Image 1 (cartoon, rainbow, N blue to C red):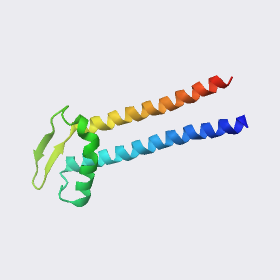
Image 2: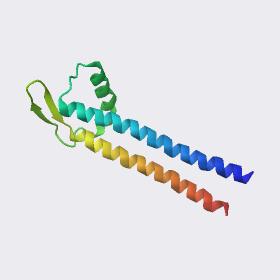
Image 3: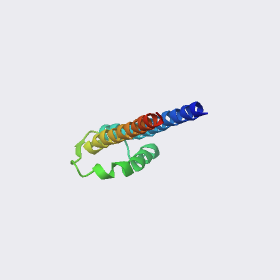
Image 4: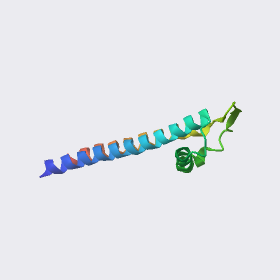
Length: 115
């Protein structure tokens, strides 16, 4: 009985870590798409680009005023370098890493309390 409980708890930790990694992956991909779209001067009138910008703006808001956005005018498009996007990607990766470490610490504490 105790062995089954330990297995299900261990699987729960593994699932929690997988969920955290999955959510981080989705956030990182969306932010990377935004970074590339802005850098290459993608048309903000395009529905997919507009959707990506609006979806990522929420997570990018705390970082937008850290550095100024650099822009350059090309022949057909205006390109932007958004350091805030890179900073957001780094910060969210660190937060996810911290959450995973907390899950692992919780598992270690529960293992030591059994004995």
